[in-house]
Image (cartoon, rainbow, N blue to C red; front, side):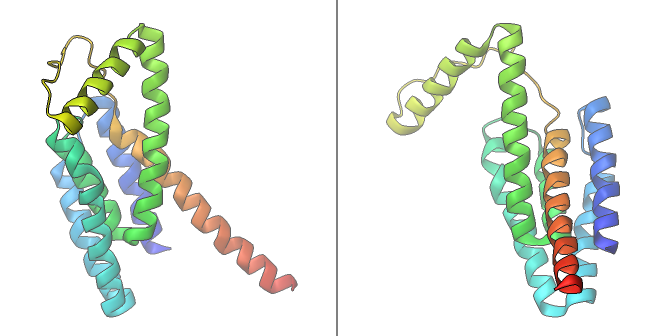
Length: 179
């Protein structure tokens, strides 16, 4: 429960700064990364340490490619590392997937409203063409680029995962009490 409260405060803080300033600050992410590792080790021993480190590593692995390609900022990567250090690899995997789906839907809606959906899909096609054939890629048009507050959308996915995990926990309690 303690780690969940830290997680909720972290998600609200990063979502707010991402929406207002398009940043996830190091002053927030680094202490959470270290706190997650320390608290998981204290509460759960070596298995907690291992899960925390695997979660942090998974948070890095999930987003580092997109960061290197210029698709998101370093703060987004550190945000997921922090979530991983707090909640472990399984939580981070599903929370990250949920957040990516939400962000993808939001991006499609925004591009459709701005009239850039087909142009963007063409850029994605050219990117994959380059990736698999090493043919020349179309340069990025900064004017038509859509910036999303990715920490905000990741936070939504992580909130869903937290509700899912807590829901199963409460469901199990209910079954064991009545069964």
